Amino acid sequence: MKQPFVSSRPHAEAGVAVEGDAPARRPPRQEVPRWLRWVTYGAILAPLPSALWRLGLATGLAMGFSADRLAALDVPGWGSLYVAGLSLVSMGLALLALGLIRPWGEVVPGWIPILGGRRVPPLAAVLPAGLAAVLLTVLTVAGAAGWSREFDVAGSPTGAAAWLMTITYVPLLAWGPLLGVTTLAYHRRRRSTPTSSIPSPPVGEGCNG
Image (cartoon, rainbow, N blue to C red; front, side):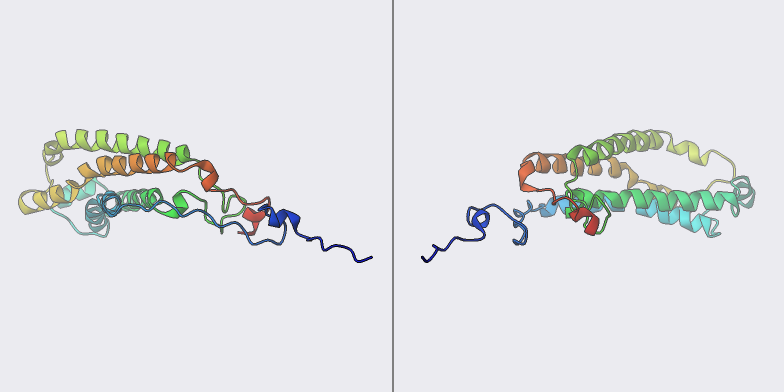
């Protein structure tokens, strides 16, 4: 007697993924508005002018300081390494804001062992970014309030050199607020995205990258 045909993939026909099936397509990610991209780019670029100014100082440019004042700052010397490191660290931290508008800020990149492909908990990004925004705002406003004291020390920049230094540091005032706006937008976007719309990979997939 001829046996009736029975599908070997009943679960697939029922819409349940089984081994060998193509992975389910991930729902489209919410588009980041253009204005928010520019806000984020502004937050990233805010520390760049002052970082470049410090790098100039670290490479041996006087930047308006007298020889005695440079010697007191240990430039050239360990002071040069400090201001260069401060510039590189500040720009590295600023670049992390890209994660608030890029896909890798929502799903761990696949090339990262173990965690690759897994969903980034929203608070893992919101809490440090929000705290950084508050601290940056407080520190830069406090620094601006006492900025004139930077030039009270003998041998500090004067005239055009003082104005150049000031102009490069002014954008820092926008760093905290711009980062705060980007962080708030990220929080709202992730809150409106159901957890189920960003599925975790099967066990072992993260290890394969």
